[in-house]
Length: 259
Image 1 (cartoon, rainbow, N blue to C red):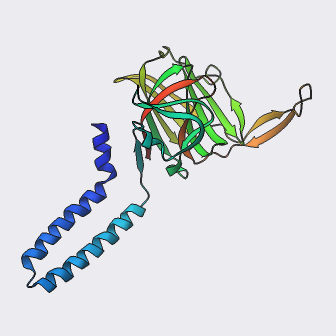
Image 2 (cartoon, rainbow, N blue to C red):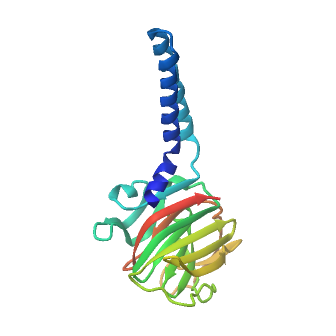
Image 3 (cartoon, helix red, strand yellow):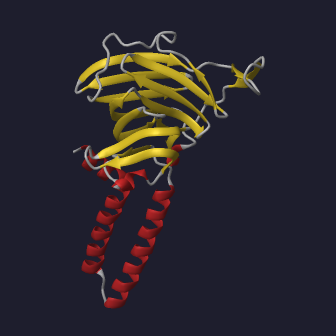
């Protein structure tokens, strides 16, 4: 039902244009005085409607629904590693993808809601937000006991544990169980909700750090680390998923909507 709803939502302008064309062609056929007039008016209607369709398609969309229910669903995703369609589960599996995968059509978006269904197979599911590219983004790593917030800047990681970030769950999630996650991004605030069926299990807030984070670099083992401040500049960017090494999760019914 959800796929049908978003299909009609996605192509609403096409349906409106088609219905309008049928009405106008019917009226033209009924009231045109001769064949030449009928042909001329029909050509003008066709050109006008074609121009309208092109204009409407260029208008920036305010939502995308990606079911991830077939291989073609991955066409607009960018990344490296394993993000493949699973015939068994009829959805996509994310694992062994160090950089993760991001959706290419909303790279300039800032405030939005990102929702999806997920099932953790091994350890966690990494949720990417405000991704400017594969080296700069926010990642909320959902593990059974909480959410570990992380920031990736120029390929480096600033990671916090769910206990330190006050993002632990009262009741742990269960492996091999489907949940729905809804994350709302508004300026520097993120709200995380997790549902099992219609029951809300989690409703927590997290603030994106402002300013800079300190990264430590060493040229070789045993050297004194060099501390370098990196400014946080993640005011806009797209959504995605990431799991590394043996981390594994299933994802489907991705929906991103502008505020």
